[in-house]
Length: 265
Figure (tube, one colour):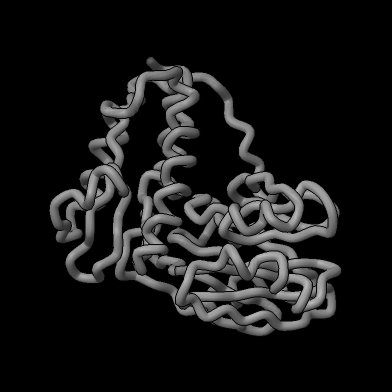
């Protein structure tokens, strides 16, 4: 389970009054006062390093496979060295909060759904349902800094809608299968709750492995969007079950391959 909300211009008691009823039973909720407002956290895998709160399972593997977790201090070091564009170098299901400003950084893969309020004092974090209680909620795009002045795009994701010859969706399926061949995967997890998800036996973490040739019918441009939105939904279900969801199909190598397929049938 993971809950992190940076709520500006609200005291800890005000934030508690707004979200307490919606916090799942049995979660240990902590709310601390910050210079900009209040920070609510619940769950595991959150660690403060300097002025960053690093949450999740950032990976050293470019395909974001489980079992290669990067320590939070390494994440903070990369952010110090390269600034926000360091998100391009950090696969895996993770995000971070800048405790100086109360802004929330969403990873390039966008596995963890990050939302920000659309009305009232600024608030951002996850899960989206609790953000909505603070003043409406709008999903932040991957590689975005959710901040009081509005979302800040960190990486230019403007893609040319022109297919590269010989690039096909089937070739992405084959490449991801090859890159995840070293994982010892169990059979499919409950298909009604977590479709397209399997479990890595070595770490007990979950891996989202959709196949493009089996996705719902739609335009080629919609395929990456469908995968992105589905992974975010599955991540929250996985966290409620106490697991972390990894999605090699959303990491940078796969995104580059998808960009070369846009426009193909």
